[in-house]
Image 1: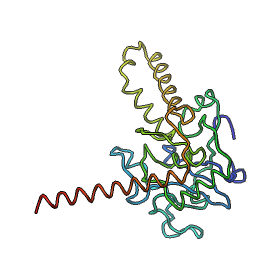
Image 2 (image 1 turned 120 degrees about the vertical axis):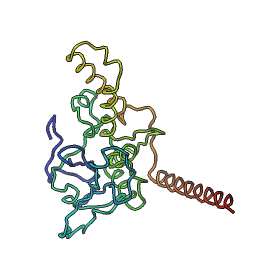
Image 3 (image 1 turned 90 degrees about the vertical axis):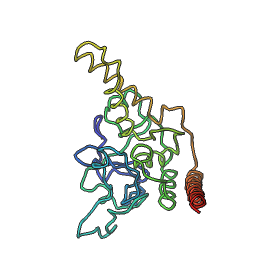
Image 4 (image 1 turned 180 degrees about the vertical axis):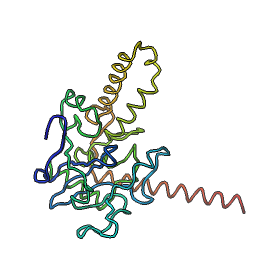
Length: 259
């Protein structure tokens, strides 16, 4: 694994590793946890399972489960329409792409030297056995509803590695999502209009981009807490029940109004 690339060979991957593979001509990466025996647990957008963004991204980010067409994988079968946390063989996870490992405990200098989000974090990883336990527990119990900005495949993998959750935010733990938000902030930032010259504009813009990425990293944020995976699942189930109960009450209320 080099300084500018986290690419590794299949022989080097270890149980508990947070791995990823680029999709759609390097537009985004799909993330998961290698749990051993050639299997990867990962959080996917399935048919009808994800929350869309309402933007052009919905046309780019399709289901991350590999579609084999008429020749399903002998190990996994056809999982292209499955959503939520699923287990796939490593080859299906990679979907023909290269294998990369997500880095933990990097220094701020290394973090900023890699301008592409979603490849490393300043946060520390828990031991492999804890990581695999969380990944397998969530495989059986789910990780909530997919959302490209708030709860995506990278969020799943980072939680499995760290046990950290962000409280009440519009952007989750994902470095890819943070990079998109940071870039958008730079483009829309009014102070940059007062920077003279293209060179000054580029330097100021890149500085703002890097600062936004750094303060959004899971290892730098103040609004994070360690949450046991059992409590996470219980909270998600409670939220789903509350939403269902609220919907039922609203339906009954509307029914009374019409009678």
